[in-house]
Image (cartoon, rainbow over all chains, first blue to last red):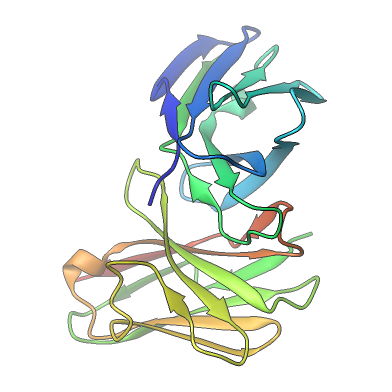
Amino acid sequence: SQQGEEDPQALSIQEGENATMNCSYKTSINNLQWYRQNSGRGLVHLILIRSNEREKHSGRLRVTLDTSKKSSSLLITASRAADTASYFCATAFTANDYKLSFGAGTTVTVRA
Amino acid sequence: GAVVSQHPSWVICKSGTSVKIECRSLDFQATTMFWYRQFPKQSLMLMATSNEGSKATYEQGVEKDKFLINHASLTLSTLTVTSAHPEDSSFYICSVKRFGNTEAFFGQGTRLTVV
């Protein structure tokens, strides 16, 4: 079953602006991952943050994790039209958990 | 390059027929593969975990006789939608993980339309 909830469901921004989306989950996790999906395609892994980490960066991406609030955020800075996609968070419950539980996703539209 | 190859990318079939979708791990041997289903504008729902050399593990509510999974080799898992009906129309995606607590690699997905 789905573990995570994401908000907002949809986000429309102007190119160059930042996009922030949030993910909340219900049970303790080992790690949380963010994925991107272009329309009608498979998912691409963006970043993984472990439960003992609070923040990670990768290029224009910044992810935070607050285990006390069971929430994570993904920030995309200086957005580009090519960032238009759906973004999903996914949680793994244990260190060797092969299964991922996905959130509902946030659809981001970046206007040129 | 792609880590996971899924084929076909789209298929249209008639009600009552069966459709087979293939998922190949190109970069590493995968004892475990995952099959997801995604409805339009919705999230991925795990259908089953495909285990090499043994029976697949199905999630609650997923009919194992409807969605047959075969993981005959360390690089190939197949999902067969048997006696397909229009309500089976969906986007099916497979994934593999190199290790347990790392990222997953996804196939490009298969759009199934049953008419």
